Each structure stands twice: as C-alpha cells, then as structure tokens.
Image (cartoon, rainbow over all chains, first blue to last red; front, side, top):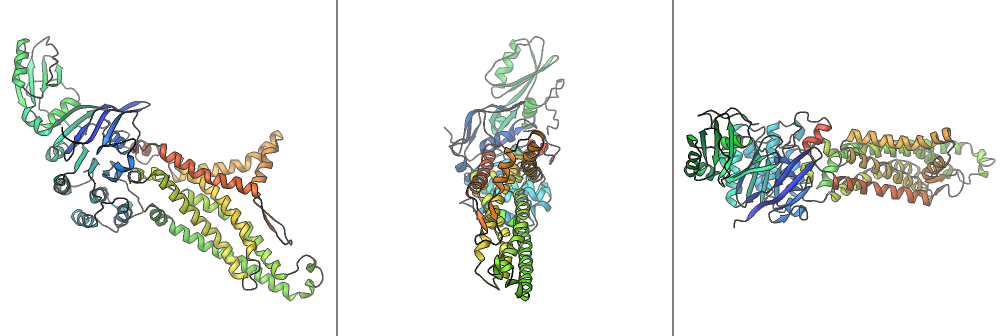
Length: 307
Length: 277
C-alpha cells in the first residue's frame, strides 16, 4: 500500500447555508504532485484550510503526513508549506523582512534556497509587500513556502498573477527541487494545462464531494468516452463507469477501463455506439463538473471555460 | 519572530509617543522648577504662612509637577491604549494576512500573548517617559521625592493595561483596527456615561459609586507626607480586568475560523470573491 501524505475519511465542513466539504475521502500519495481541481466554490480552499487547521472540520477525520489534523496541528504546520489563494502577507514588511520573520519558525529553513528563489523569481526584495504587484506578491509567497524545507506543499491557486515564464519556472522548481526530493505537492488550480503538465494524480471536487481521484496516466491510457444513441437506455451501474450524461437521444459515458466491453453491453441494450474516444483531463473535468449542453455526436470534446 | 514583527509595525508610533511624553514631562518639570525658584525669591512667605503646610519648598515643587503629570498621564494612557490596541494581532483578519500568520507553527496563544505583552511594555515605556521627564528636571533640586512619582505611574499603567486589553480584544473580535477601536471607544463611553445616566433617570446611585470607586486607583492629597495612596481593591480589580482581556483575545483567536474570502467580503476588503472553494 502506498504511503499517503494526506488522507481523509468522510471529512465534512458544513456552514449554516452550505456544505463546503461533504464527506471527502482524499488520498494523496507521498512524493506525488496532486492536482486538486474544481469549479469556484467546489470546496478546494476549504479542504486545504481544514487540513491546515484554519477551519475546523464538522465531521470526519484527516491525516497529514501521518499526523492527525485535530491533535497534531503545529507538527503539521512545521512540515507543511502553504500558499493561500489571496496571496496576502504582512503589508508593512519587505520580502527580506518576511524571510527574517519566517525563517525562525521552520527548523529546515534554507537561506540558500531563499536567495536562489529570490534571484530566479526576480523579486524586489526591499519593497514593502503592499507596494508589490500581484505577480510579485505571489512570488514572495512561493519563496517563503519553498524555502522552508517542507515535506508537503499545499498551494492554493499557485499561479495567479504569474506570467507564463514564471509559471513555467515555478512548475520546474516544484518538480526538480521538491518532487524529485520525495516531497509532496498538492495544488488547486483552474488551469487544466498546468495540472496536466506536472500532476501525477488528480482529484476533481464538486459541491464538496470528490467526484474522481485518479492517476493522470490512467486517464490518458484507459479512460474512454463512449457516445451512443438510442431510446430508453438503461442506466448502467458498471464499476468502471465514471459518469453518464444524457441529452435527447444521445448519451455519453465515461468509463475508466474496458471501454469495448462496456460498449458491447450498450449494444446489447439496443444502443448504437457512435464513438469510443480517448479523453483528456479537460473533457473529464467538464464531463464531471461542467454544465450540461445538448449532446451531439462529435461534440464530446467541446471545452468551455470553467473558471 | 512575531515580537519583532509587532515591534517593527509599532516602533515609529511608540518612539513618537515616547518623545512627546518625555517632552510633556520635561515641560511640567521645568514649570515646577521655575515655580520653585519663584517661591525661593519670596522667602518671607515661607517664614510666615505656607511653611505651616509645607516644610520644604522642594517638596512643594515636586507636588506641583506631579499634580500636573497626574492630570495628563490618564488621557495619555487612554490614547496610547486605544491606538496600540487597535494595531494588535486581530487586525490581521482585515489585512488578509491571518492565514499566513496562523499557518506558522506557533500556538495562537503565543501570538496573542506576545503581541499583548509587547504592547503593554510599549505603553509602560511611553507613560514612564512623562514621569522620567519630570524626575530628570526636578532631580536637579533634590532626589528625595522621586518615589512620589511611582504611584500615579503604576495606577495609570494598570488602567491603561485594562483599556489596551479591551481594545486588543475588540480588535480581535471585530477583525479590524477601525472596528475594534470604535467598539472599544464605545465601551469606554458607555462605562463612563451609563452610571451617570442611571442615576439621573432612575436614581440608581450604585453603578455611579462603583465606577467612582473603581477609577479611584490612588488618592492625591496635597501637603501631607504620603500624598499618593494606592487603593488595593480597585487596583486588584483593574489588574484582573487587564489580565482577562488577553485571555478573551486568545479565546477569539483559537475559536475563530479563517475563512479568508468570506471574512474579507464581509469587511469589504475584497468584493469579488464570495466563494469558499
């Protein structure tokens, strides 16, 4: 069994008017890059905050680096780097002063790494944080999280404000300096191309529920979209069925393996199989989390903006 | 680390206030010193009437200076307590830096008490500077009465600690400097005005008596050997109040969740993201 950096069992966070996290069973393997996907309000940020103790879970349990989130809060924080969605730090301090503030909290802090990232990210080190652009604020947040020698990085929308060059650089750093060192990265994003570029695992969250957790390689190799036409098709309850969507005479089935066998069953139900095609992450995400449009043959791969 | 950050944020204000406080103290000392010299030039007065009450013109000068200090140090304590309390840890909710702060591996209790202790130390230094100003001038004529300056300073620090703690707590509760400051000022006004109003409207004198008793931390009596008498029970009460507020701030910080987007939206900092995803 793979050792897990993060695991949760029925994790819930319920606010008076919304179930932000609803029975989440998350399994993030150690040493993996895990892309945490979901639409706005899906519960990604709340999940990350729950893991870090910023919000209290309403029910369920979770472990981070083998430590219980309720009991071992400070031990988790000591080993976890976090970049928040808002990218807000102390406004009065410069990046250099923020480093000075931060380093004392983390036993594995590396000044050499901080200096390296400051150079690579081209951060104006002596400007107060409040005067920095969004991009530079994001870079400072990353510098602090990456230099603390964390075993786990939780990055909430890590590329907001970054230009493509810096985004690419950050991705490289995450892989070379962290994942190759056996560390774990979980990052939430709306940019599927970024996720596809570096993630090994993905989790898709919608309305607080984890709809899919899979290896990206599995999605590429084994997942297939089966489009069929036919009236009165039975809803199949196959173990390999990820989702089924129906519009007028057409139905779309996303299956995680054995697509041909699945299609044969549909034919047995009287359906006409129009297409069996491999899928990319965008199609899986839109299929699971996207809104419905009338389904037409050949439109299975239509992508719409999800952010 | 956090103490350094708090000091970094407050040092300009503290230095300014401390210098102003010192200047006021020096001014009071100088006025008393000038008065002392004037009294000396009217030596005949000493030999006739005033000498009945004042054995020593030096003592008269000290009493004069400390009487003026007493009248200024309380408003100064109120001002310093409110302004330092409003820039305490609770304001990080509004600034959006609370997720960053609370994901440093240190207990929330440590953040609250570090911040509170530093603020209290700063306030004590600021108020003490006024007394230092007086003492440094009047020591030129005698050091025999330096001890006279300690009771009002102690009383004011204690009262200031309670007011500072109140503002510290309201800022943590409101999550914003301005709201915390307003709430604290409202509580102080309410505390001041309500007993009087109750007596005026419903002839309830109890609250007024309690307020007067609780504010009567020390007593100043001109011309007696021990003019400043510290009152034990009011001081004990204010000490308890002063210590209760950081505990309440700690409770707020430990139980309040950091739902950044929502918090910021409520306070109007970020208008665009109301989602909790």
